[in-house]
Structure formats: structure tokens, C-alpha cells
Length: 377
Ligand code: GLA
Image (tube, rainbow, N blue to C red; front, side):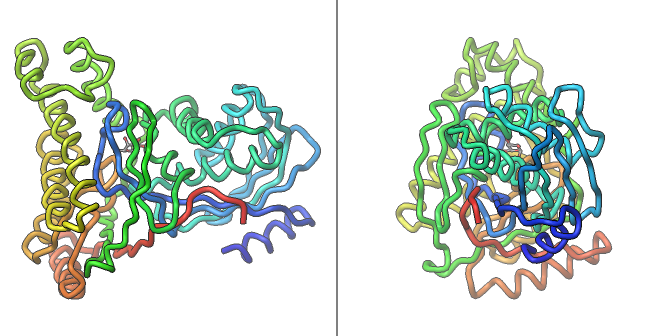
């Protein structure tokens, strides 16, 4: 990928730049909890974005998306918002950096990536973090890592229409090889947990339903709004820390839909903590159980699943897979599966065959390795 980028950069701009990279992410458990002030448990993966960048001495950004074969030029003022959606991510990062007092100027860039798009693996966070990290480095801005993640998140909010939480950008910036990270999204305290399922005879694999997950202008924002309404009815800033008893006590004052959404979120808080404890003891069976519970909570209460994802979860269960659930925002994308080494081949073969029979195409198998986040190459 790096070579292809370098070649294009040379052809387009006749020079060489610096290389920066960042990663997509998985999340073992803790879904739709980040914007509720709860816990998440993500890790960066070995699939991400690489960008070559060089300052060009103007006030314009000249950007080329190698995978799409598209070029875009834009200025750095608010009214220069580009049309292409991929360019809006870079533009948003520039704008959010400027809003935080960062003095930046124009640059040339070519970038490419291997995070599957629309799979719920945060290709957009990888793009944002790559550029937030790079601008901080190239202009020597001294912005701390949390603020880099927040620049990415604010880009989603203000330039891409997704009211997302902090998880994806956090994982993409803070990711560390071989580690998952438990983040408390209220206090922003975090802890690295070494994660090596192979050592315990397990493998982690994603199955992409290839149903395109699209969060922009999606019911994602509605889910968040539901949670905020319930938190307000409870007199809290976030749903975090609320109990099922408290929720039941206000049941008559909220809609049935909002009740279901909050029911899922409150249950998920405990599941994340359980999984962290279980993992520390090497108890992968408990990890797996909680994953299934999350899946069905996301499907029945949070209603962000789809037929294809439910089918993959049912198939996993039939095949004896330890844990399986929707990963990321939902509405399509992948399941994340924790499977015993000896069951792996049969599971993949059965899931592919059965899925194909029902939906006319195979799910895509994505093996992931937990890797480093944003960095200079
Ligand atoms: C998307 C958002 C995240 C998070 C997840 C669901 O990936 O970007 O902030 O809310 O969905 O856990």
C-alpha cells in the first residue's frame, strides 16, 4: 500500500512526503455505551489508513483518495467544505484543529486504506485519526492524544452528520499492539488489557454480512436521542450508573421504545465489566456468554440488527462458537466471533455455506490482529 501511495504522490506532486497511519478497530463488548458515559472495550486492528503528506506552502489542501481514484482541492475556511464525503473527513479534521487554536496551512496528500468500508470497523475514525495525528506532528501543535480523538469525533458531529461517541477515535489513536483498552467514557480513564486469545486456544474472527452499514443520517442519532431522553427523565446527565429498578420506576413516563433502548444500555454496562474480569482470569466462556447477550440485546431492545446479522449469530451458536455479536453501530456490517481453534474451520465453512444458501452471497471472513493506532511510519 505504501509503495502505491508513494508512486502516486510522486506522479501527482513530483516530490516525497512523510507517511502517517492509523487503524480501524474492533470492540469486544460495550456497544452504544460510549455516548451514555459508559464503558467500551475496543482495540485497534491491523487494517487502517496510510497517508503520505507534505506541506505545500499554500493555504489549500490537495488530496487524492487512491482507492477511489478521486482528487479534491479545498481551502481551510468554513465555507470551503468539499462535496466528496471522504474529503469532508480531512476538511473536518483541519477545521477542528484550527478551532482548537492549531495554526495549520495547506498540504498535499495521497492516502489509501484496507479497512472494509461500511463494515462497522471505523474506517472513518482511521482516516480522521491519521490526519489529526499528522497535522499535530507536522505543525508541531502539541495537542494531547485525547484531544486528537476528540478532533475526529467533532469532525463526525459537525461535518459528517453522525452524533457518535468517542470510542472509535479513541481506539484509533490509543490502540496498542496485543492490547484491548477499557475506556470509561465518563471519566475518560482507561486501562490496557493484554489480549491474546491464541494463547488460550481461541481465535477472533469477523464475518462481514456485506450489508452496508451507514450511520450518516441514520437511526443511530435516534438511538442516542432516546437514551438522552431517558437519562433526563432520571435526572441524570448520562444513562451510566442507572439501575433497572430506577428505569422501571419511570416506565410510565417514557415511551415503550425509549424504555427498551435504556434497558439494553443499562444491561450492557455490567456486561463490559464482567467481560474485563473474566478476561483477566482467562475465562473465555463467560466472555462468550456476555457477547451473545449483547447481540440479542442489540437485536431485540436496541433494534440495530438485521436479518443477516441475526442469522450469523444463530449459526455461530449452532456451531458451538463461544461468543458472537454485532460489532459497532449495527444496521449491517460484521459480527465479531470468539471461536475455539478446533472449531474454526468448520464454523467458517458452515456459516459461509448456510449464509450463501439464504442470502445469495457468502459473508466475508476478516481475521484481525490487535495492533497499534495512530503513528508516523
Ligand atoms: C459507532 C460510533 C461509536 C459507538 C458505536 C456503537 O461506531 O461511532 O461512537 O457509539 O457505533 O458502540
